[in-house]
Length: 301
Image 1 (cartoon, rainbow, N blue to C red):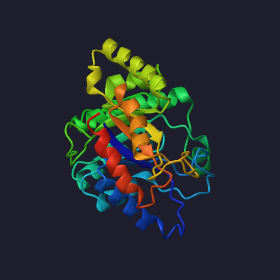
Image 2: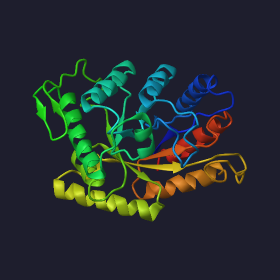
Image 3: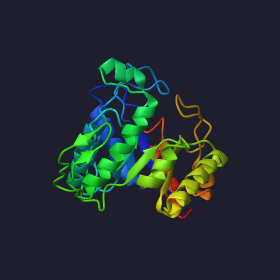
């Protein structure tokens, strides 16, 4: 099992001046601890599960470019890109640029988008859910076509590209890994089986996650896709301390290394390849030696 980290919160003491140095340190500490990936949300207002919309929020791809300059090995992506925010051709160019400038470390996390408040607030059209999923599928088709170097005109219901040129091509071959976020059984998991390299499921507990994997496996069988080809990822919360039990402002009580390994091990047992953790105390440098030990212990699972 591998571990990644999502950074969804930037309102650290001294923000906004403190944001860049704190985020840079988090990125370097994450890489030094052996994390395989580093993620930010693709939101423009803070989401209600974390805090009020007035809290600090950075644009995702500019942030990933900054993180690329702070690191040298860790993979970088959004968890996940809202399909409504960027035209597909420009999104593919953006992710390709990140991949080229980071030396092949870009990941495309993508989903159908959901936050109506920030769409309305910033004047971004927010189509009905059915249309958002149609646009998601067309975007996946366009991304795969552009990364294959196919300049044939694309004519979809929602997007028309006369010449989907993508030069330079991505360093990652055949393309930056595509991860779909969400656990919808009819549409999202079917599209994972048809187009993507990875799924991302909320931590519903081992049995809940296993049920989603079973649905994904059924889609794979129907479409002739080897289930084993898909990287299974789960997003979960994790706080660490030497003794455990301390209450955190976000993410519940702190765990010891052993408790964290047990929690993640239960996800590994049902086939989870990557646990992407949100850490309330990720700006505390003392957490990272503990996190490095968790990485070491779950790697063989």
